[in-house]
Image 1 (cartoon, helix red, strand yellow):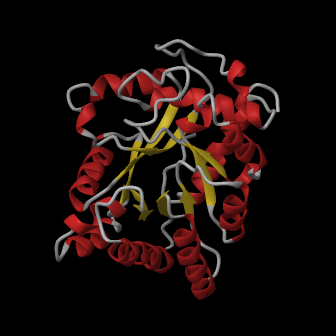
Image 2 (cartoon, rainbow, N blue to C red; image 1 turned 45 degrees about the vertical axis):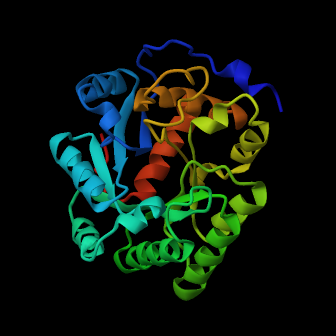
Length: 281
């Protein structure tokens, strides 16, 4: 494959308006944005990021995401309990998530999934909450957002069980870092695959190869901000939605297609998966 990194063309910190995009995974509720959120949103608009999904990690985080979604037309919310926060969940917190999911601007469930890298929460507790999100997705038709770290076999086992129980799954593997076999298994069960800033990192040729082979109608892009600033802005903190143009450009180059065509397809994919989102004219 040609050297994708040489083709990440925009290296400016202040990015001029580009092809429209949607950031499908941003933690806009993060306290790293407190005091600068208005500036971040202004830069987001200048960069051509039309809409964003703010991702909840706990009932309190989800509540703040819904607050931001209520306040800003371009923001939508995902509500859920992150696997690394499951030990903090108290009786009644899940019931609040279920109620939040009924909000008109709650377009997804999660961030959910499994994480064996951080030893914060027992894996069986994580599995319990992951199962709750999947079952709620199957009941409501809301997509679920999957976090995975050092637990590919566990994730595939639970997704397979859910697929065999209820048919094709409606969800996205967020900030994907798996191998081609993992990607193919997820695709066969109906999942979408999303790429964040890690796909732009210098040593991630293998991940760019995976991105190149994802079907065009099943691929998404995201920032996972305030984390994972993309090349060439890895030293810039916090990451923000405006930086996503670098990720989109690198994935478009990996697929050997023009950015505007790739961006347009990711927008169509986003609206198809997160069907409660309001489509911009």
